[in-house]
Image (cartoon, rainbow, N blue to C red; front, side, top):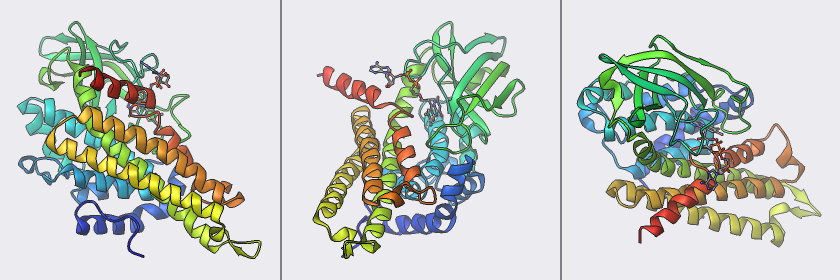
Length: 376
Ligand SMILES: Cc1cc2nc3c(=O)[nH]c(=O)nc-3n(C[C@H](O)[C@H](O)[C@H](O)COP(=O)(O)OP(=O)(O)OC[C@H]3O[C@@H](n4cnc5c(N)ncnc54)[C@H](O)[C@@H]3O)c2cc1C
């Protein structure tokens, strides 16, 4: 049998990422999940390889490669740990929004730092505003040459380790985006009552406090009042990568359960030799292959900057729902072993379910696809 998960990208690159995952990520994935640890050394290691800036323009020290590679990176990393993948997702989001909307001084100052391993968080959500970010309780106003930002964000992925934050706040002109370095006076984080989630545990998703934080006027990203459009466009990019994470989870669940079913004896035969069980695997492989094709199709849309809201939403909708289904079936075919806390099946199920909500819930993705159709 040939390789089950053939590369849809650069073969040598995929082989190198797989090696990194085997060596550095897979051995610690369950422990980091259990203890809710941010994978700092791993994230820095991925950056050192140039992978967290793989699509960034070479003008700023990036790899200048296409989104097929970025999708492959997120897929392979997530086979080892979805939590590690989301740890670099927030960095990609920050990089994308500055690249697409930032002024020249922001680009020149911050984009080269990504090649050096700058870690970021993308802070939109507040206690009273999750899916609906058209109005916010975090406010910003211009005071001379500086923006003053005041408010609090919640559920912030990578917030425990981030050195740089992209923040959404409301000004008189409407919702706007700001770039805020971590060492800015007035910025702090704490572990709130809902910070620790049951899935995608990459260090508690902290609350971020902005206590009259002052940043230079040029740290407004893009156009004042156009923040919602800018962050949603950026999410259209990261949703394809999030979909790749779903594929990684599905693959891991499939591989682990297949290995177990091939080795476990029941009624004098291997679990895998029951036709009822084989059908599970046949269906799983078909589902994962189909979702995977959709995700790489979405990567192509990103490369061409065409219909990205449609394809990234379809890809994330399908890939996370397949992942949740795959993780559940994988557990089923392993019997009690699938529920044991010394296996990874629980992690796969928790991560997959959580990603049906985080980064654009299934319902919001369906709304986006429907809006695409409404445009005619
Ligand atoms: C693990 C994790 C990590 C996260 N990381 C970050 C982060 O780094 N940065 C950040 O800013 N946020 C982050 N979030 C927050 C996440 O983006 C929000 O949870 C998400 O946007 C949904 O918002 P909500 O939880 O407030 O749900 P709500 O907006 O309260 O929605 C509740 C339910 O109603 C549905 N719903 C809402 N609007 C509609 C509609 N128009 N039509 C149909 N159904 C609708 C939703 O899909 C959901 O099912 C994270 C969340 C999790 C769980």
